Length: 140
Length: 67
Image 1 (cartoon, chains in turn orange, blue):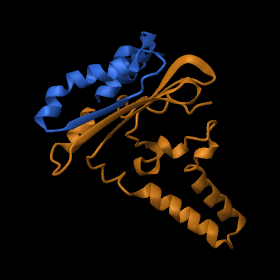
Image 2 (spheres, rainbow over the protein chains, first blue to last red; image 1 turned 180 degrees about the vertical axis):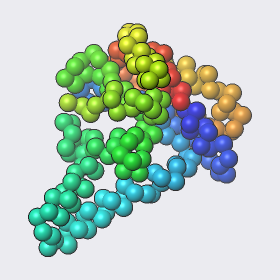
Image 3 (cartoon, rainbow over the protein chains, first blue to last red; image 1 turned 135 degrees about the horizontal axis):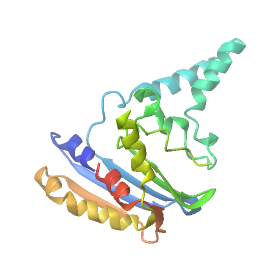
Image 4 (cartoon, one colour; image 1 turned 90 degrees about the horizontal axis):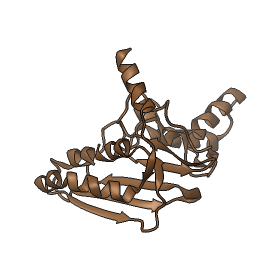
């Protein structure tokens, strides 16, 4: 919320911070925080969309040798939410190419339930830079 | 190294309890009220009415939302 307010401080026009909480699947709770501020240059309209579009174009064009077919497959897989257990989370959600495949997401999610009901694992935005990946894992 | 150890201990000392996340959201909104007002930021919420409580460390969750 502080990041959001920070991002909107100098904004002309609507400054709106929106906080939503809702019940997700499997006893999860989803919290999303969004704002009308600008993102960082790295994440705005940037590398992610470009990489995915590039991969799709290459796949559709066809005529690739086996090596490059595998390369394109890998390029597309990290954007595919269907690879998650609940078909709802792409690798790139956390491993954002625009952030060096680190955490570039501004969405906060708190998961409970799944294979370990009653426990909570937290998707943290920037709060613990040294532990961002280690303490988190996708639903499994 | 010390920094890594300090970071690790933050996780070791987690206090687990049942937390009402809507309550945490409201608390943080209250804390940030003057900040939001100062910069003319409109805060809008849509809080689910039937959320289950989650097991977690209340303070850590507050910090996540706060930042």
